[in-house]
Length: 142
Image (cartoon, rainbow, N blue to C red; front, side, top):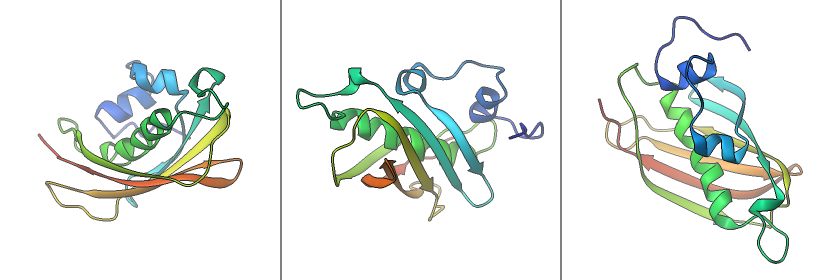
């Protein structure tokens, strides 16, 4: 992927390597796979380490929720003008099956663009199967 030199904002500054990624993204092993700001879609990968597991050896739900949040947030942030941001107001998560350590894939898209609460559904996949799905609402601010 080539960095789009015409785009500005935190998402694009991190993507271009001009600013470091957020510490939470580093912890989760966040990697951009694909983004399409015009369609409002994103695909990211995470490296779920053994350190994220609970006593039965599966990824603890809080880490999975953080991965979903770190999928859906950038889907919107990539579309915003340089001086806007969008903190999460709510995150609804549904766990469908256990996730094991390894590479997890997050997919998200913007389906509703209102100033106060853009709706963003997403899902997290592990080993080719959906392990979690959810949606997020945010407050877009200048």
